[in-house]
Image (cartoon, rainbow, N blue to C red; front, side):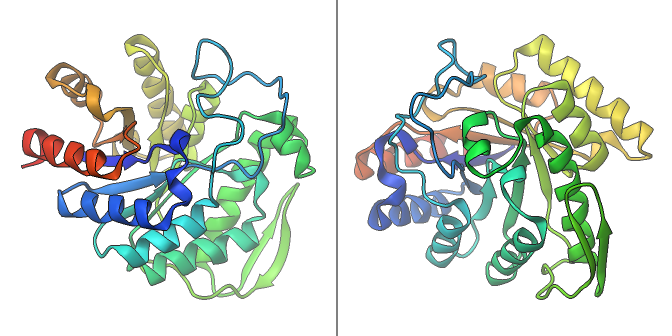
Length: 287
Protein backbone atom coordinates (compact mmCIF):
# COMPACT_ATOMS: atom_id res chain seq x y z
CA UNK A 1 0.00 0.00 0.00
CA UNK A 2 1.20 3.48 -0.91
CA UNK A 3 0.33 6.39 1.36
CA UNK A 4 -0.38 9.92 0.19
CA UNK A 5 -1.21 13.03 2.18
CA UNK A 6 -3.74 15.83 1.92
CA UNK A 7 -2.63 18.87 3.93
CA UNK A 8 -5.04 20.55 6.40
CA UNK A 9 -6.71 23.08 4.13
CA UNK A 10 -9.14 24.27 6.77
CA UNK A 11 -6.27 25.69 8.87
CA UNK A 12 -4.94 28.06 6.19
CA UNK A 13 -1.43 26.58 6.10
CA UNK A 14 -1.43 25.53 2.43
CA UNK A 15 -0.60 29.12 1.41
CA UNK A 16 2.21 29.37 4.00
CA UNK A 17 5.44 28.50 2.13
CA UNK A 18 7.40 27.63 5.28
CA UNK A 19 4.67 25.36 6.64
CA UNK A 20 3.76 23.51 3.46
CA UNK A 21 7.38 23.16 2.36
CA UNK A 22 8.37 21.67 5.71
CA UNK A 23 5.36 19.36 5.61
CA UNK A 24 6.21 18.08 2.13
CA UNK A 25 9.85 17.47 3.02
CA UNK A 26 8.79 15.60 6.18
CA UNK A 27 6.38 13.48 4.14
CA UNK A 28 9.16 12.53 1.74
CA UNK A 29 11.65 11.82 4.54
CA UNK A 30 9.17 9.50 6.25
CA UNK A 31 8.43 7.42 3.18
CA UNK A 32 5.07 8.81 2.09
CA UNK A 33 4.55 8.31 -1.62
CA UNK A 34 2.66 11.46 -2.56
CA UNK A 35 1.02 14.73 -1.63
CA UNK A 36 -2.38 15.69 -3.04
CA UNK A 37 -3.90 19.15 -3.40
CA UNK A 38 -7.42 20.37 -4.09
CA UNK A 39 -9.01 23.03 -6.30
CA UNK A 40 -11.66 25.71 -5.97
CA UNK A 41 -11.11 28.72 -8.21
CA UNK A 42 -13.74 30.53 -6.16
CA UNK A 43 -16.29 29.67 -3.51
CA UNK A 44 -19.47 31.64 -4.05
CA UNK A 45 -20.89 33.13 -0.86
CA UNK A 46 -24.30 31.68 -0.01
CA UNK A 47 -23.98 28.76 -2.41
CA UNK A 48 -26.92 26.33 -2.47
CA UNK A 49 -25.23 23.41 -4.26
CA UNK A 50 -25.07 20.37 -1.98
CA UNK A 51 -21.62 19.12 -1.05
CA UNK A 52 -21.96 15.36 -1.48
CA UNK A 53 -19.46 14.30 1.19
CA UNK A 54 -21.01 15.71 4.37
CA UNK A 55 -24.34 15.26 6.12
CA UNK A 56 -24.94 19.01 6.24
CA UNK A 57 -24.51 19.54 2.51
CA UNK A 58 -21.84 22.17 3.23
CA UNK A 59 -18.19 21.59 2.45
CA UNK A 60 -16.00 20.95 5.46
CA UNK A 61 -13.74 23.94 4.69
CA UNK A 62 -14.59 27.47 5.74
CA UNK A 63 -15.92 29.48 2.79
CA UNK A 64 -12.92 31.82 3.10
CA UNK A 65 -10.27 29.11 3.41
CA UNK A 66 -6.99 29.62 1.57
CA UNK A 67 -7.14 27.26 -1.44
CA UNK A 68 -4.06 28.02 -3.58
CA UNK A 69 -4.04 27.23 -7.27
CA UNK A 70 -3.22 23.51 -7.27
CA UNK A 71 -0.70 23.48 -10.10
CA UNK A 72 1.16 26.51 -8.77
CA UNK A 73 1.24 24.85 -5.35
CA UNK A 74 2.51 21.56 -6.79
CA UNK A 75 5.20 23.43 -8.72
CA UNK A 76 6.39 24.93 -5.45
CA UNK A 77 6.34 21.52 -3.75
CA UNK A 78 8.21 19.94 -6.66
CA UNK A 79 11.03 22.36 -5.92
CA UNK A 80 10.96 21.43 -2.21
CA UNK A 81 11.25 17.67 -2.80
CA UNK A 82 12.91 15.15 -5.09
CA UNK A 83 10.86 11.93 -4.95
CA UNK A 84 7.41 12.79 -3.62
CA UNK A 85 4.68 12.24 -6.22
CA UNK A 86 2.47 15.25 -6.90
CA UNK A 87 -1.28 14.69 -7.25
CA UNK A 88 -4.36 16.78 -7.85
CA UNK A 89 -7.32 15.61 -5.86
CA UNK A 90 -9.00 17.00 -7.86
CA UNK A 91 -8.84 19.52 -10.71
CA UNK A 92 -12.30 20.66 -11.79
CA UNK A 93 -11.86 19.73 -15.45
CA UNK A 94 -14.70 21.77 -17.01
CA UNK A 95 -13.13 24.95 -15.62
CA UNK A 96 -10.01 24.38 -17.75
CA UNK A 97 -9.49 24.61 -21.49
CA UNK A 98 -7.57 21.46 -22.48
CA UNK A 99 -5.11 23.29 -24.74
CA UNK A 100 -3.90 25.43 -21.85
CA UNK A 101 -4.20 22.62 -19.30
CA UNK A 102 -2.16 20.21 -21.43
CA UNK A 103 0.73 22.70 -21.48
CA UNK A 104 0.56 23.38 -17.74
CA UNK A 105 0.44 19.70 -16.79
CA UNK A 106 3.16 18.66 -19.23
CA UNK A 107 5.45 21.44 -18.01
CA UNK A 108 5.00 20.42 -14.36
CA UNK A 109 5.51 16.77 -15.26
CA UNK A 110 8.74 17.49 -17.12
CA UNK A 111 10.19 19.79 -14.47
CA UNK A 112 9.33 17.36 -11.66
CA UNK A 113 10.81 14.33 -13.48
CA UNK A 114 7.47 12.61 -14.17
CA UNK A 115 6.09 12.86 -10.64
CA UNK A 116 2.65 14.18 -11.59
CA UNK A 117 -0.72 12.42 -11.23
CA UNK A 118 -3.59 14.41 -12.74
CA UNK A 119 -6.79 13.82 -10.81
CA UNK A 120 -9.77 15.23 -12.71
CA UNK A 121 -13.45 15.51 -11.89
CA UNK A 122 -16.61 17.33 -12.91
CA UNK A 123 -16.96 19.50 -9.80
CA UNK A 124 -19.94 19.77 -7.46
CA UNK A 125 -20.20 23.54 -6.84
CA UNK A 126 -22.47 24.73 -9.61
CA UNK A 127 -22.13 28.37 -8.63
CA UNK A 128 -18.34 28.12 -9.09
CA UNK A 129 -18.78 26.67 -12.58
CA UNK A 130 -21.18 29.47 -13.45
CA UNK A 131 -18.57 32.11 -12.55
CA UNK A 132 -16.39 30.52 -15.25
CA UNK A 133 -19.24 30.76 -17.80
CA UNK A 134 -19.60 26.97 -17.73
CA UNK A 135 -23.13 25.57 -17.87
CA UNK A 136 -23.15 23.07 -14.96
CA UNK A 137 -25.38 20.71 -16.94
CA UNK A 138 -22.53 20.22 -19.45
CA UNK A 139 -19.78 19.46 -16.93
CA UNK A 140 -19.72 15.70 -17.55
CA UNK A 141 -19.54 16.02 -21.33
CA UNK A 142 -16.91 18.76 -21.03
CA UNK A 143 -14.80 16.58 -18.76
CA UNK A 144 -14.91 13.67 -21.21
CA UNK A 145 -13.84 15.94 -24.07
CA UNK A 146 -11.15 17.56 -21.96
CA UNK A 147 -9.60 14.18 -21.16
CA UNK A 148 -9.71 13.08 -24.79
CA UNK A 149 -8.18 16.36 -25.95
CA UNK A 150 -5.39 16.15 -23.36
CA UNK A 151 -4.46 12.69 -24.62
CA UNK A 152 -4.28 13.94 -28.21
CA UNK A 153 -2.21 17.01 -27.31
CA UNK A 154 0.30 14.91 -25.35
CA UNK A 155 0.48 12.17 -27.98
CA UNK A 156 0.54 13.86 -31.37
CA UNK A 157 3.12 16.23 -32.78
CA UNK A 158 0.35 18.00 -34.71
CA UNK A 159 -2.74 17.60 -32.56
CA UNK A 160 -6.20 17.84 -34.11
CA UNK A 161 -9.44 17.53 -32.15
CA UNK A 162 -13.01 18.29 -33.15
CA UNK A 163 -15.55 18.17 -30.36
CA UNK A 164 -18.68 19.86 -29.14
CA UNK A 165 -16.82 22.17 -26.72
CA UNK A 166 -13.21 22.13 -27.90
CA UNK A 167 -11.91 22.35 -31.44
CA UNK A 168 -8.36 22.74 -32.71
CA UNK A 169 -6.36 21.82 -35.79
CA UNK A 170 -2.66 20.89 -36.11
CA UNK A 171 -1.83 22.31 -32.67
CA UNK A 172 1.84 22.03 -31.69
CA UNK A 173 2.02 21.63 -27.93
CA UNK A 174 5.47 21.18 -26.40
CA UNK A 175 7.03 20.05 -24.13
CA UNK A 176 5.42 16.64 -24.11
CA UNK A 177 5.18 14.76 -20.79
CA UNK A 178 8.29 12.85 -19.78
CA UNK A 179 6.79 9.43 -20.49
CA UNK A 180 4.59 10.57 -23.37
CA UNK A 181 1.51 10.93 -21.18
CA UNK A 182 0.44 11.72 -17.61
CA UNK A 183 -1.69 9.37 -15.47
CA UNK A 184 -5.27 10.66 -15.29
CA UNK A 185 -7.25 9.57 -12.25
CA UNK A 186 -10.99 10.22 -12.15
CA UNK A 187 -12.41 11.68 -8.96
CA UNK A 188 -16.02 11.39 -7.87
CA UNK A 189 -18.57 9.14 -6.23
CA UNK A 190 -21.23 8.65 -8.89
CA UNK A 191 -21.99 5.97 -11.46
CA UNK A 192 -20.91 8.46 -14.13
CA UNK A 193 -17.52 8.90 -12.43
CA UNK A 194 -16.99 5.14 -12.20
CA UNK A 195 -17.87 4.68 -15.86
CA UNK A 196 -15.62 7.60 -16.85
CA UNK A 197 -12.74 5.96 -14.99
CA UNK A 198 -13.43 2.69 -16.77
CA UNK A 199 -13.60 4.27 -20.22
CA UNK A 200 -10.93 6.95 -19.94
CA UNK A 201 -9.01 6.83 -16.68
CA UNK A 202 -5.73 5.39 -15.52
CA UNK A 203 -7.11 5.48 -11.99
CA UNK A 204 -10.26 6.00 -9.92
CA UNK A 205 -10.29 8.20 -6.79
CA UNK A 206 -13.75 7.95 -5.19
CA UNK A 207 -14.81 9.65 -1.97
CA UNK A 208 -17.53 9.03 0.57
CA UNK A 209 -18.57 5.50 -0.46
CA UNK A 210 -19.50 2.80 2.01
CA UNK A 211 -18.55 -0.83 1.44
CA UNK A 212 -21.59 -1.80 -0.63
CA UNK A 213 -21.58 1.32 -2.80
CA UNK A 214 -17.85 1.11 -3.43
CA UNK A 215 -18.33 -2.50 -4.58
CA UNK A 216 -21.08 -1.33 -6.93
CA UNK A 217 -18.98 1.49 -8.35
CA UNK A 218 -16.02 -0.83 -8.98
CA UNK A 219 -18.32 -3.26 -10.79
CA UNK A 220 -19.57 -0.37 -12.93
CA UNK A 221 -15.99 0.68 -13.63
CA UNK A 222 -15.00 -2.82 -14.78
CA UNK A 223 -18.06 -3.18 -17.02
CA UNK A 224 -17.38 0.21 -18.63
CA UNK A 225 -13.73 -0.73 -19.13
CA UNK A 226 -14.67 -4.04 -20.73
CA UNK A 227 -17.13 -2.29 -23.06
CA UNK A 228 -14.30 0.04 -24.11
CA UNK A 229 -11.89 -2.85 -24.67
CA UNK A 230 -9.84 -1.97 -21.61
CA UNK A 231 -8.66 -3.95 -18.59
CA UNK A 232 -10.58 -2.70 -15.55
CA UNK A 233 -8.20 -4.40 -13.15
CA UNK A 234 -5.34 -2.26 -14.52
CA UNK A 235 -7.09 0.95 -13.39
CA UNK A 236 -5.49 2.05 -10.13
CA UNK A 237 -7.77 2.60 -7.13
CA UNK A 238 -7.05 5.38 -4.63
CA UNK A 239 -9.10 5.73 -1.45
CA UNK A 240 -9.07 8.33 1.31
CA UNK A 241 -9.30 8.70 5.04
CA UNK A 242 -7.95 10.49 8.10
CA UNK A 243 -4.34 10.02 9.07
CA UNK A 244 -5.08 9.72 12.79
CA UNK A 245 -7.88 7.20 12.26
CA UNK A 246 -6.13 4.63 10.10
CA UNK A 247 -5.94 1.25 11.80
CA UNK A 248 -5.51 -2.35 10.70
CA UNK A 249 -9.25 -2.74 10.03
CA UNK A 250 -9.43 0.31 7.73
CA UNK A 251 -6.25 -0.80 5.98
CA UNK A 252 -7.71 -4.27 5.42
CA UNK A 253 -10.87 -2.67 4.00
CA UNK A 254 -8.81 -0.75 1.42
CA UNK A 255 -6.79 -3.83 0.51
CA UNK A 256 -9.95 -5.92 0.15
CA UNK A 257 -11.21 -3.55 -2.54
CA UNK A 258 -7.88 -3.58 -4.36
CA UNK A 259 -6.74 -0.07 -3.47
CA UNK A 260 -3.08 0.61 -4.14
CA UNK A 261 -3.02 4.02 -2.43
CA UNK A 262 -4.59 5.75 0.57
CA UNK A 263 -4.60 9.56 0.56
CA UNK A 264 -4.89 10.54 4.20
CA UNK A 265 -5.84 13.93 5.62
CA UNK A 266 -4.14 15.45 8.60
CA UNK A 267 -5.90 17.94 10.87
CA UNK A 268 -2.79 19.25 12.63
CA UNK A 269 -2.08 22.96 12.25
CA UNK A 270 1.10 23.08 14.31
CA UNK A 271 3.96 22.00 12.04
CA UNK A 272 5.89 20.28 14.83
CA UNK A 273 2.82 18.26 15.78
CA UNK A 274 2.15 17.48 12.13
CA UNK A 275 5.67 16.20 11.48
CA UNK A 276 5.58 14.16 14.70
CA UNK A 277 2.32 12.63 13.47
CA UNK A 278 3.95 11.68 10.16
CA UNK A 279 6.88 10.09 11.97
CA UNK A 280 4.60 8.09 14.26
CA UNK A 281 2.47 6.91 11.34
CA UNK A 282 5.53 5.93 9.32
CA UNK A 283 6.90 3.80 12.15
CA UNK A 284 3.65 1.84 12.29
CA UNK A 285 2.56 1.57 8.67
CA UNK A 286 5.50 2.36 6.40
CA UNK A 287 8.72 1.23 8.04
